[in-house]
Amino acid sequence: MRAGGGVRPSRRGVLAAGLGSAWAWPAAAPAQQARQLLVAAFPLVDEIIRDALPRFRQLHPGVEVKVVSRQYVDHHTAMTTALSTSVYLPDVMALESSYVGRFSQGGGLEDLLPQPFGVDRYRERFVRYAYDQAFNRRRGAVVAVPTDIGPGTLLYRRDLLARAGIDVSALQPSWEAYVQAGLRIKAATGAYLISNAQVVKDILIRSGLEPGQGLFFDQESRVLVRSRRFVRAFELARELRRNKLDARVTAWSNEWAEGFKRGTLATELTGAWMVGQLANWVAPDTKGLWRAAQLPESTFVSYGGTFYAIPRRAAADNKPLAWDLIRLLTLDRAQQFAAFKSQDAFPALLDAHEDPFFAEPLPFLGGQPARLLWRDAARRITATQVHKQNNFADEVVGTELDNVLDRGKDIATALGDAERLLARRALR
Image 1 (cartoon, rainbow, N blue to C red):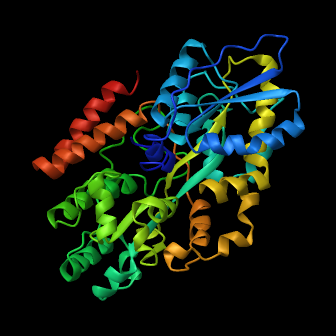
Image 2: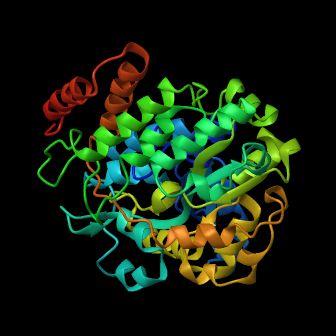
């Protein structure tokens, strides 16, 4: 799974593969029963919503809220079908950031700019890039409200760097410096620098973008994959592979997890939420050995995030209630903080960023107050223009990089082949 609008994968996406429940949609409530609001979500998000329901019932005591939870992929497949057929539409749907971009290109989601919503009045209260991700420039519409984000970070094994005689500063000046530091780490410790060269490519193609600039396509659907961004990303990934600095393991596989447990992976380029995953189930015995830093070359990218949206063809009578629930989940500081503390959902709401909690030490990171780093990163990420074929383009580019890394394909040829394939799909 590749997460558009950020780099792959998102925290909830990787967890949801084993946590969801394939519930059937409930039948519509008879008119004489209590009014019902139907909310569709995926694991962890569903728990956040349920935790907020006591507050919501205080506001709307006569309303029953039914939360329907599916596994991550099943949920988004069901939402795709519901939006295209207008059958079994929920009143509120949770969406991962890559799907917000995809769905925003159609007309299935309610535009939240006009009254009675008026979402633009809240714009300055959100991390800018998160709000902008839900803005459809072609339609002039905002189709979803952000609730949590995934600022990118560099996680590194302090003990392995010490054995190599280097400090984290050796990893950060440039991506080329990151590779050179990896050579020293490998020579001194035998550890790989990174799990897979694809991880570095995913970040580099998103580096240096201006706000609103397209990732794979421009505003006229012209393909951008032969630009310098992609050439450099492919060259650096090839350098990593040629020097045997990547372990060639797939994220979230058993081999990947073993690399963290055994200390054979010196760094990870990921979302801030990974610290919780390492601490809780991937490699808890490595507590105190890891530290966090900003990504090399002052790179700031997003690793997923969650939004709430209202289907345009959902029941009109329920839309005011749906909007009240979304506002509670996204604009209430206490609710945002509760989700942060219980589910590691980094708040999209800026009001929730001004709290001593961010300066608290993280035991897994040896007491480092890393949330301050991540808060700074979140405010420096830029939103990219979303194209309806972004997810397909991500797969095509990833496949061509595999051809370069595993089969020796020339980079210019690989990117040219990707360009031709994407040009045929761009206007569909």
